[in-house]
Image (cartoon, rainbow, N blue to C red):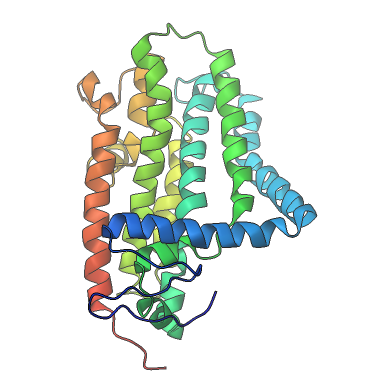
Length: 294
């Protein structure tokens, strides 16, 4: 992909990196199209070396599987953890791991913003006639991250086969809603973390503490954590809406912080609110950006 493209001036259309012309269209659709073109380029590049792709994907699956192996080792010595059985924890684990895996696949490159700010390569994205967010998110699209998603789905499948749940239509619909809404919430956290890197360029680890750290937190039952921490991930950084709240509804368990049961249905609204805040934060960070001049 060329580093320099013609900049849109007046009412003219500038060529995009894929050799097509951008029509005047809503900014969101333009960004989605640009994301798809860049993603497709990286996928083609990855699939040119299929053996390498297969090995790295399997390696990604194997490495992430060690998280669940740790839980299995715990249950070789105990029958329950925080009052939860292995199958119940597997449900929490599977939902959070799958949701985070989807978000990491689609937006995991956002943690490179600080590096781009430091070395000045963000400037090359600003002169292109497509949204910067789409370019940053799709940059170096890593298809090998499918290994994490696969591992999460395998654990989720094990949980659903092992649990004796009184299924209702609402509980059935809750499962895909948890995964999609959870991925959206994690995605908003990725974007907000990237926006923070405009101010603190070495803050990628701060972002990782809420993304990678957040998914590790959600893989365990809330009853083993202090109530202040549970309140924090419910009312401050709403990661509890990724899996804890809806999953405990499916399991028929009470939430450790007194909340009505209907909050389990709020993840889609929470995801929308998070993305509104993430969009505002990203725009504020981009406006505050000052070129390195290099």
